[in-house]
Length: 233
Image (cartoon, rainbow, N blue to C red; front, side):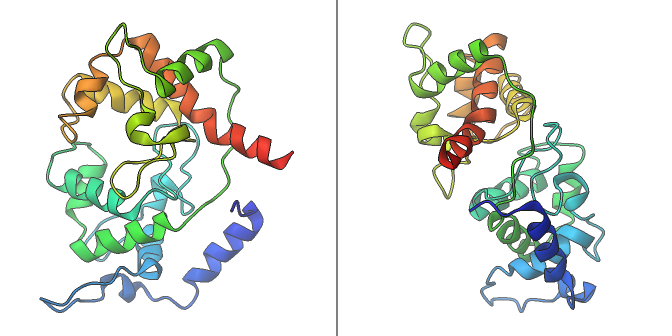
């Protein structure tokens, strides 16, 4: 369900009312199973933690939609397991990023679970983006759905699901993700800077040339937007 922006912002603000900053630092007894708390995750997203982690909203927005430029990925509605796993990878230097790595290291295991649960539950509107080159999108659709037998490239949808909807809990959605971010991550795998999924994504990324990366990124960015327009008719 897509929530109108004004209602979404109002609801998000209301959720923080009455939540003290101390709730973002609530202790968990050792040996006790932690149940992810999205309300506490909302406080972390907005205000950060007492240990020094800044609020996630500074880059990803409180809605999880980021700013549409692709400098930061859309994380709203992504599986909580996937989001938590990526944060653990940043903390362990399996994924290295000058912004995310120190932030992840400042989060406790409970912080990770709570903020991941918060963002996983969101479904904000998609921002309006510039219309992509239809030729590029068509080429990307071919790669996403069929791949390239001649070049040994498997279809992206084999793992990321029909239309790039993802295969929770471990494989992220690509539909509606920002093209610059998709392209950047593929290049990170190509050059060995991103080290998680070394036996799948790194191998696939190394098969792609620059034009193919641009094409598949352009295709996935507009997939969900196209589906929403069709559904509204």
